[in-house]
Figure (spheres, helix red, strand yellow):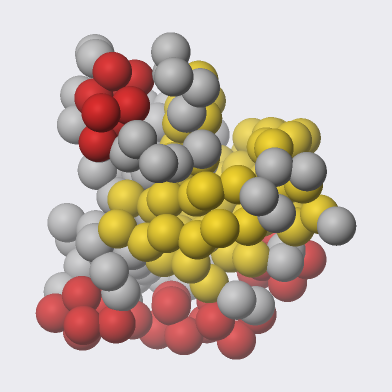
Length: 167
């Protein structure tokens, strides 16, 4: 079997966009699991994504008490033999691989957000680090983005970064 994931972070609705872009809703409808690494801002975004499919998510620094009551700071799942963790913030880019190896020793894939900067690396221990960027607030990046990937046979496959139009 294989499980298709849509990775999101930093949606910031309604502060950076009034609504989720259509491309995000379409991608969420086609995913087996929607993974969101925090900064939803409005609980309605969690409700909307949950109506489109299963969600594994965490709260971020811009999320209020309503989201913090519904979501953990760190989420974990075991999917297709892959130990997955989701967290909003991992700190500075410098030294990230070493810090995350130490912080998540029993993890194969760590999804994170906060920076709005897409990230795809593997640590010395073999931990895959993925940040999908933001579908609504590109900041200094060339485009708004999300990621897709497949988990199968205890591995991470077909990681793709997708540009998103804000409509």
